[in-house]
Length: 189
Image (cartoon, rainbow, N blue to C red; front, side, top):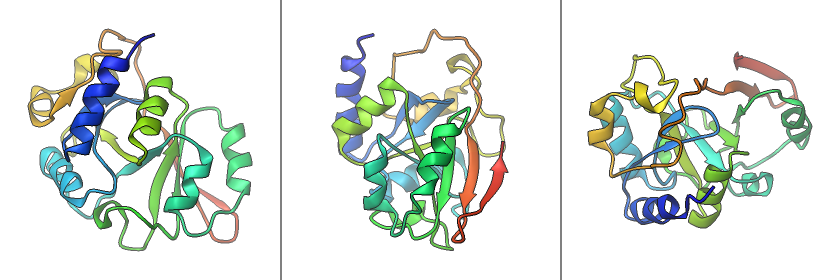
């Protein structure tokens, strides 16, 4: 599937501090440069979301984690390899990201994507991308593109064409917290 046109447009928008509406490895998301605090603030404003609620960061592969998390327990990779669905991990010791994507306790939620579109976009961008559900805060997450409210379309700078016609319902990722002692706390199955 050729999505190079979408990727090129997304790169221009992301590099300029803009917002994209894009299909992720789970549900449709609103994205921006995860190292750009002003862009992250635009997402908080668009979603009418309290600043205390953090957002998920997407990376293209495991080695990128070392740039954004101070200490990684390598056992997390074994856990993720066995996961049945996309899994977001909350890590302690976030570094190199916009302050407003890092929780007040210093943690950050990161998912390594397998989706070809997302992986390609992140690799070309060479930075992590924010991914938060394409809905207003408190509303249900959209299962497909058709469920996204016009207020969200109007608040972004580019809407990806890829997968818009896919009506297969998608669900948010699992979320776990990787604790310092190597134990796992399941936040969302």
